[in-house]
Length: 340
Image: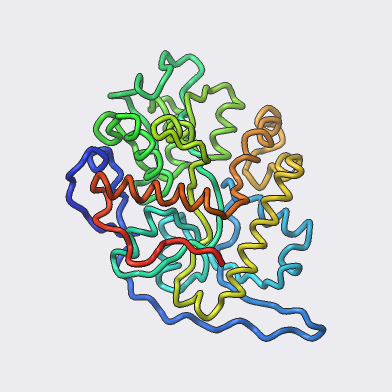
């Protein structure tokens, strides 16, 4: 995903919140409207989405959906297109390769002020970044890690943006006060396990695997946000995002997809044993018994199953703070979220 440079004028800009907008790829015209109702009164609606991403926090959704027949229940036919990591998926949404993908509020604001028109129409995940250190590490807080080597996802990721924001509201300039190693989660994990990093901001399920093997969690990004802002709500990471032109022609499909995801998350929260049952989706092998034991407690809270004024307030707070310190030049012309 290409970046759109912004002038560094503030603490948070110095803190590394500049994550880069999407490239200036031309939006393609949305393809196809909702399909007509099927015989018998049912309706089947198609949408192009990425396939499940093994080893990620959201990987379990499709297994739960298959177990409970959620795709058919919500009248969906999901056309799973191959894709890369988060940056590639977001670019594919902008160019029409995908109809639906995940965006966070800062990322959506950045691309919309760069000429695109993306809107978040439902929740996906609360923030699940965790600051992890080895068991024998002398560091007891993230402030103790100043000047140390820390692994984190690329600056274009929602995980990086949130970690930078949560650090900054606690008075820590992210990219100046740590020696950051940015890369995909698996690459940073390899560096960390080799002993080349003092700490890693790991996402789930890697964070749970690390804790299960004896590493220590200093803090979560969400906890740091709450401490620095006084906001008691969970920190929103990303949600179901679509292009607004596609939404105009496929509103019922978008609503069905949001309901499909919400039901999967609520089923998991009602029965967290599903998380351990599908541990292989998370990339956790059967021999990692401690990690599997920890998964339900640590992962169930990650799934965002509400989309209401409390969530919208959190989105606004993230955007407002970014604008206040100059990390975003301006607010998008239209809200970057909507309730269907």
